[in-house]
Length: 207
Image 1 (cartoon, one colour):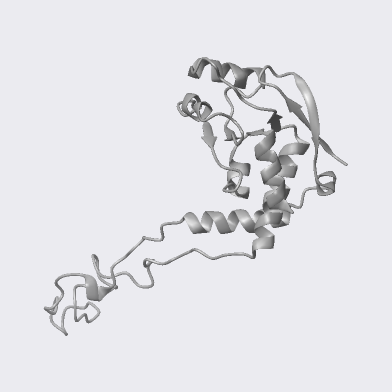
Image 2: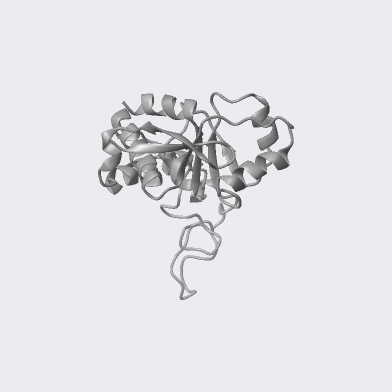
């Protein structure tokens, strides 16, 4: 059974915790792709809008006489054939969002966490306590865990509320709850910092 090493805030090993047997298997890239494409599609605003000929002002007058000019006949200066005319088959506001089954979303979260675990980017700490209440001391913790300068996704369940206060101004650090993260959140960050309590909640989601 695979095990995840647990560290303290000084970067020293204090124990380990068991992970599901699935973490021993190869990463399923296909299920990750399905979920990531869905999450990114759901974030699209879909507000691109071009005007068709009926939405453009003017064009009521025939631009030139029917015959004798040598040009093709035209009935409106707002025809798609004319400069500044309407757009044919241009983009219109639309909703790009869709969903995939919940089992696929959970599987994708499992696979992304597995990928982070396999490359050593999933770091678990027993608890985080910053007695001084200073951001620089939290930054020192990241340095001890070899995370400084990286994009970090953090889950602080089980820690004091003051930890979120001292970490909120740290650049490239995103704080989530274990019940809220998805595969896209995991894959966008270089490192995953999770407390032991948060990891236990996360594993319950994956069952």
